Length: 301
Image (cartoon, rainbow, N blue to C red; front, side, top):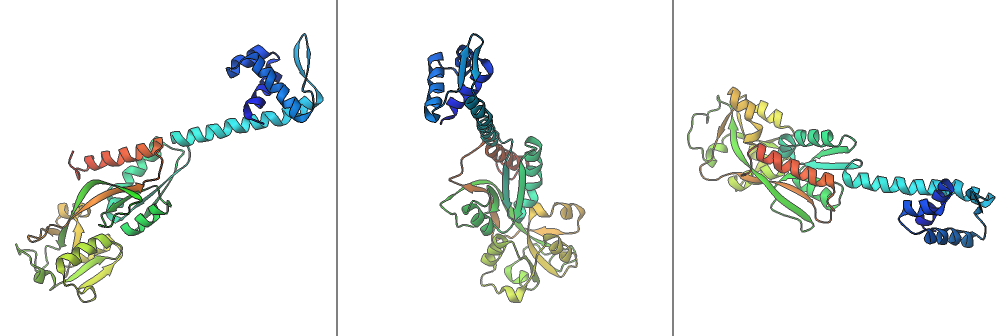
């Protein structure tokens, strides 16, 4: 039995006459009568007694009305659910980010989403770029912000939203602090601090220092703040995104050195599954991310 028949039946119970029911549903009065007869034939019962006062329910009609109004309401609720979902009024948004994009973008992104859509559930996973890509491929995440991995998956869409530069970070007390041109051999005289979860950063370092023996020249740490603290002791070096050193550069606790023979730049990418159907909130998330990229001046307008 289709929902229109039940709607016609419930409306006829309440409005008593065919004409107002037909008007409400945008159909003709004979069509309303046809729907009622169709229900009666299906169950082999009479639903109404007709008199001068309009349509009155039979016992069978009373029973059907008890269930029909619940079915009609459930249909309305379901339609409302999908309308809200498409409009972004309910549901969830699952975000993923590698270290640097998480630090730069995610606080603002989450704040803007939660302000515009207060009923949306928001989650964030901070992992390496390959892990974020894997979760996007499996559709365990909706959107990811990552540093480029050079291995784009054909099932994902990659949008470059900016670039990030790595610089050699060190303390003003480090022996290389006053040296203008720093070579590979200079770097290899000191221990290099690596972020264990920053695979893209390590890829660039290994490329520049090739041949490279990480076990000999490096200390692996799981926190950028710990790396920056270790640098202040003046015994180690690290390759850090310039965006993560803003406070230290302003205070003078750390210095940055550009490398003359290589420019360590990486793309920052917005990534999401190709098969994803854009909803209103999806469009909002992408707009927020692109606007923030311009605001932070990491992408050319």
